[in-house]
Image (cartoon, rainbow, N blue to C red):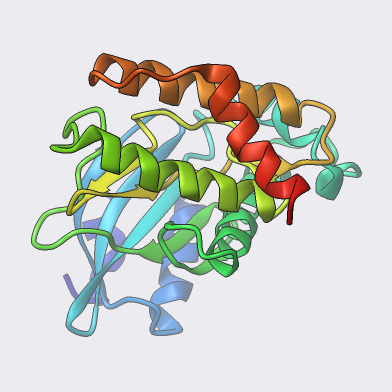
Length: 239
């Protein structure tokens, strides 16, 4: 899909592109961040995920929906983040800040050598991210269990340690937000990620651990939530 005729063509994608979003996408195209949208990966209530073409490779467009996002729930999470304490309860500003926070969290995680998609750019309600996959996008862990659960979990645990060492907690980690890319984990969806200084951070971390342990227990591993939690947090204490 070329840039000409973008307005009419983009509106065919599940009626998800409002005029404001189209203008944001147009600006990204003008800045040569991508050449055209290829196809949708998922259309959700909160965000829409598309592949786009940049020169000879793919990237990911993540577009937060301006009208159907549950911005009240977003606000309940983001207001406890020390970085957003002065954020007003305004729908668009909350959604824009939500996209910005995901970009910042991914950038911080990437710097800490966490296996995440490289953040490329963001503006308003749109994120541009590294594409993970080959001809097809890498599947989520829920849809593609690892062939060697013990090895996969070990790699995931190292990534969870690195997130903690970076001063972050994912806050929504589960088999829905972990990709199985060639039998290696790639962690996605960092919009709920917050800093360890957030008063709810420990609660979020324990929830992440619970979700991960539950999944891998079903894959046949014998894991203990308290033990996994200690391994993650002890890494920070001994840094």
